[in-house]
Image 1: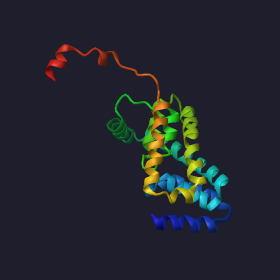
Image 2: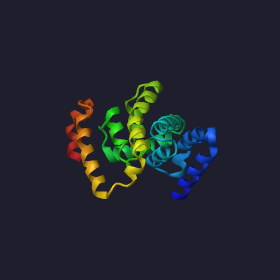
Image 3: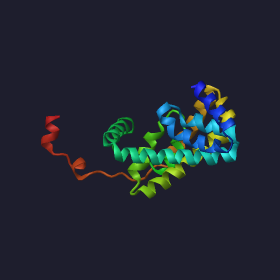
Image 4: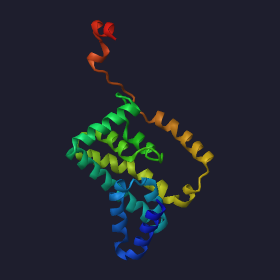
Length: 195
């Protein structure tokens, strides 16, 4: 992973005017290289500074989300696997809000495209998906780009404290409704006897 980071740094330094385009493009190939979004955002902060790095990261991450949307519609098998994974990890009835996804994106070890799937489930159109993705990507880009070197030097104790600090926000920002299907609420007695 360090070799890839060094390669990106060298390309950006020698890229001149094309450096931002290369950096944004690197966000698009990031999933193929199995690199975390956080690493790319931190690299953007080191290369371009807080403001420009955040701007380029938001563009790159949003384009990555749009690419995910297109791939899910193009490859339904991938979509089904991700839905099963989400249901296994979060349950069948959990529907996160855009605010919750934005907070969860701050946690480095939660899969980026699994959260994109959560946004896809609550979106009614492509336009709404892009808008929600854009808004949920801003905190991630701002935090990790602005504090790139500082966050990379976190001690494990401070990281656990930071994650515990995020948990109350997930509860406060949750969707405050629960939808049950009629068949789930009224289970047939014959079915319950069989189980």
